[in-house]
Length: 168
View 1 (spheres, rainbow, N blue to C red):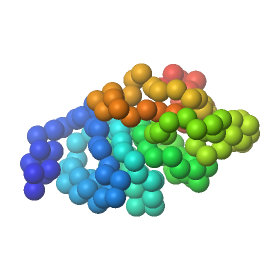
View 2: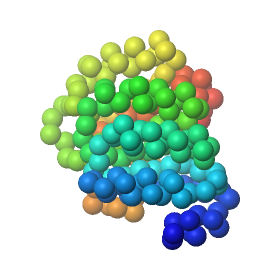
View 3: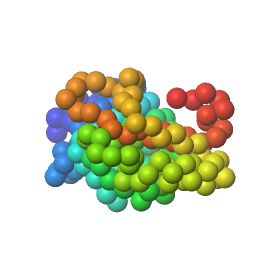
View 4: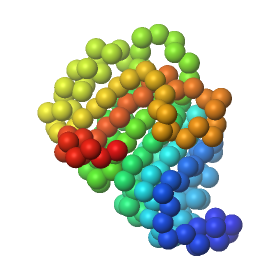
């Protein structure tokens, strides 16, 4: 397998960028199954895909198996409110997460909800020790290899303790 051969030469990767095909997330499964045991500090997933149960499980497995400290997901528009438990699971494993919504601005909504909704959600999550920041901008630190994609909304999650410690 070509992935096994490629990954066998690594002991540590600073940034692993994976493009997830919109109708073929099985490629992500193939990659995860052949990665070996090297450490991955930052994981970046890009593509017009939905965060399905299978994708969530794969990401959580990668965090556990490869010591991922930060996850960046650039994805198709989807109601992020349905992903809050997944975000909590990522944070529980000690990683931070940024989610970017691909597309073009169509109104005042962020991830299918209004700014007021997200303000209330941020207050709820802060009671659980989770810091959430929602904005409508791209992230300059986010890899710019694919420049034709635009980011219309960005949300950053980390525990309140991680934010106090200045973890990125």
